[in-house]
Each structure stands twice: as structure tokens, then as C-alpha cells.
Image 1 (cartoon, one colour):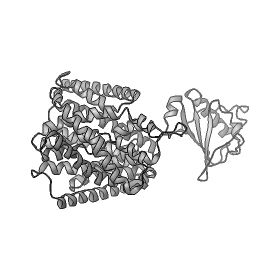
Image 2: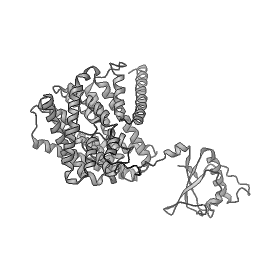
Image 3: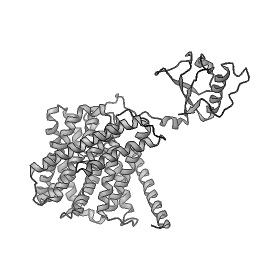
Image 4: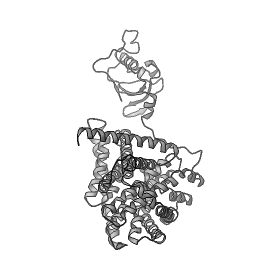
Length: 507
């Protein structure tokens, strides 16, 4: 690639990225999952639109699988173990038995209603049997739903990708219709067990390493955390196990460990997840030929209705029956089974394997995901309210991080009071810091306390202050002056002129 070609490539990539980010904002405002507009960006940029050609299915499969790994690592990092630990059993049953039931019912509907061969019907049923957490939570996170309900849907979405991929690979390489149950179950158990073990082991190893190894820069911690997740994915894949479950579980372990710089790590992981989603869906939009999609509308609509109205409710009802989940929540879980990245990526597997009718399957799945995401996504809030799952007086969980400081244009400062400093014995109100500078926290002898105006400072204290850019310099000068000459420093002519080494550092 020449330098001019590189400039053109980066210009196109940057433009597409910015257009996709704008699309994500639009989707959020109108209550749509972002994937729909990402797909639209890819179609518009494709051969029938702006003329960008892309038809390498094998490359799409490789890049799509890598993007799924990043998305699942991010999903694990942002999942609270306290929300899902009691739901592992029902989520596991939904992700395994539920997937099998969904495949059988959907394939039966496709076979009898559309006349598809059993091979094609089973492959199609397997491809669309996986739910997508990114698509669901782009809508659900704005609703005050029971934490048990959201945790169950999230856990199922993280777990069911692995069984689905295994089934698709099996149906893509068999020509005898229904494969033998024994080898299939054995393969499934091996992939889940080994992949899960490698994911947990890598997550534990990463959490220990990141807590005990001091890295030279803060920005390396998020990179290392995501790197451990990708390593788990690759190690499991190289061992012939499920890299998908390994990626998710390693992220889950790392995200719930006491890692340093967790807020920065989470922000980085979310950004990486968004980038992976944008790249994945735009690429898949480029891959399809819009002129071929019209023939796929009717079969996609039929298969989608069978999946939405029969297969999903039956699998949810039978799988959750032993766990006494209220029927209202079961109904919502059935409706919230959005399809997204995984089904479209999985359509590349039969295309690469040259399975008969693979291209038709790709078009059907593409149209199905677009149609039923458009149908289910905007209606999820209304369905939740109709089922009585949303209460107007319920408290909504918020994510607390450093973003408010950016909004307020404020700086976070730390001050350590050394031995011999004149700050020892000074009360907080005697600091007379320029408003709106405020001492928000004191760490003393390993314990934390929230100071009031009469709290007396001691040597060894670590103070946490918030200041604005306009008052920061004056606050630093005031603290240095008192540290040198005491609370009468100004009367003694001490104005806190900076020295090469001070006691005030930005946090």
C-alpha cells in the first residue's frame, strides 16, 4: 500500500466511523438498537451505494470472530457478578437446553412452512438461536427493571454464543441432516468445560498480576486487562475449545476483581466494544448484496415469526419451569430475545464451507435480524410496562465515574501532609481555600473520613480536593504557604511560591 492509498483508506475509515457514531446517537434518541443503523451505514457505503467493494467472506469471518471476542470481553468486564451469581443455573439451562429447543422448533417451522431441506433448516435454526446482549441492553439499560431479570438476560446472552457456534459448525460440516447426539453432546461439553476453565484461569491470573505488578503508565492497565481476555479467547480456540465462553468468563473474573484503575479500564473496554460493534456491523452491511435481499424477505419473516412466537417462548417456558421465574418475567425474556452480531457472523461459516444454499441463508438471516430488531427493540419498554415490570417510583441504577469532573471542568487533587509540615494541627476551615475548592476526603492511618469544617489535619494525612482550573493554582499556593509557615502564613509574608518539588500532585 502506497502512502496516498493509505491516506484514502484512513479517510474512508474515519468517515465511516464518524458516521456510525452519529448513527449510534440517533439510534439512542429514538430507542433503536444501534446495530440497525450500523448495518445501514455498511449498505450505503457498499457497491450499490457509494461503491465500496467488499466480498471476501473468509476475511469477514476472521474479523467478525475477532470482533465478537472483543465484544464478549467487554460484556464480561461490565457485568456485575453480584447480579448474575444466583442466575448461573437458569442462564446455563437457557444457553444450552434452550438453544437446542429453539433450534429444533425453528428448524421444524422452516422445514414445514417453507419446504426447506432438513440440513438447511437445522443450519438456519442454529444460526438464529443466539440472543445478543449488546442489542438488548442498548434498550433495557434505560429502564428500571428488576436486577434479577436484567441479570438473567445478560448472563444468557453471554453464555449461549458458544453452544450456538458449536451447532453451526456441526451442521455446516455434516450432510446427513441430524448428527449423532452422543458425539455432539460430548463435543459441546468439552468445548464449554475447557473453554470455561481457561477463561476463569486466565482471569484469575490476570487479576493477580495486575494487582501486584506496578505498570509504568496508567493507560497500560486497560490494555493489559483486555489483553488477558483476548489471550483467553485465543488459548481456548487453539486448544479446540470455545474461545467465546473463555473470553466472556475471563472478562467477568477480571471485571469483578479489585483491579487498579477500574474506571479507566471499563471506559477503555466500552470504547473497544463499541469500535468492534461498529466495525463488525458495517463490514456485514458491506458484505450483503442489497439486490438479493428482496427474495429473502418472506422466508425471513416466516422464520422470524416462528422464532419469536413459538420457539423462543417454548424454550423459555420449559427451561425456566424448575426455577419458579414469574410468568411476567418469562414473557418479557421471550420478547427480549433480540438477535444481533452473532447470527450474522455465523452465516459466514457455511459460506466459507461451501454449504449448499449458504448465500441464501446469509440473506435470510440478515433480513431477519434487521426486521425483528426493528419490531422488538422499540417495543421492549412498552412490553415491560404492560407486564408491570417497570415501576415509576423505582430507583434507577447509575454508573458513577469521573465524567462529572469533565462536565464541571474540575480537577481532582491529592495532598500528602509530611512530618514537620505546618499543616499539622490546622482545621479545615482555617485553610481558607479559594471557593469552590473543597476538601472532600481524608485518608488517615489506612481509614477514610469525610471532613467537616472543624476537622483538624494531622501529619501523614492524605487529602482529596476538588478545584476548578481557575482556582487550582491559588489553592496550591495557599496549601504550600500554610505548610511552610502555618495558618498565619499570609501575615508572615509567605505566599506559597512553587518549588521544584512540592507536596501537591494531580490525581
